[in-house]
Each structure stands twice: as structure tokens, then as C-alpha cells.
Length: 121
Image (tube, rainbow, N blue to C red):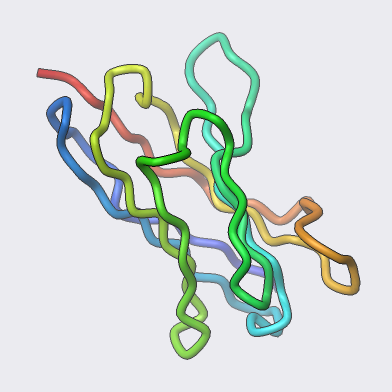
């Protein structure tokens, strides 16, 4: 019943920007923490950013200063604004539904299909 759908990925030049979207259904979105992960070929999936139901954001080291996570509860959507993109940001980006009834963000097993981001000239 839980559905998670990412969109917005694509090919972008270095120093460019991209905004990813994640629409979630089958949950009470307003009380649900959300997270963005990414996975590059041959590497482990890593947390990029998370946001609590109250709007408190946390970022992985690679995202700090360049990426911004936000949410629009009226649209049941979480966003990842990516600026100053680098080739090393190339990965498949996944959206995750966090667990409720916890303080902060704890991942669940509800994932989207992923949206690929390629940063290249």
C-alpha cells in the first residue's frame, strides 16, 4: 500500500543544479520523517539528507553546503535541491520513508525505485 515515487533525475553539467522530488502515498505523510539516499556503482548506499516531520534537516558530509532537503505536506512530497553538482554526485538517488514514533529519522524498508543523476560535461 505504501508507494514512493522519485522523479527529477537526469543529465546535468558540473556546477549545475537539479531538483529531485519524492511523492509518498499510503502513509500519514505529515507525521513521517523522510530521507534521501544515493548509490554509485560499486559503492554502498549512503544517506544524503533526512528531514523530520517537524522540518528539522540533517545532511551527510557530501551534501552540506550544496543540497537542501525540504517537504511540502500539502503535496505529500519531499524535495532535494542539489546545487554546485560535481561528477562524484553521479548516482541513483532513492527516497525512503522513515519510521514514525521515533525521535529523528530512522529508515524503514519502504523505498522508491530510484532516479538516476549523471553529472558530466
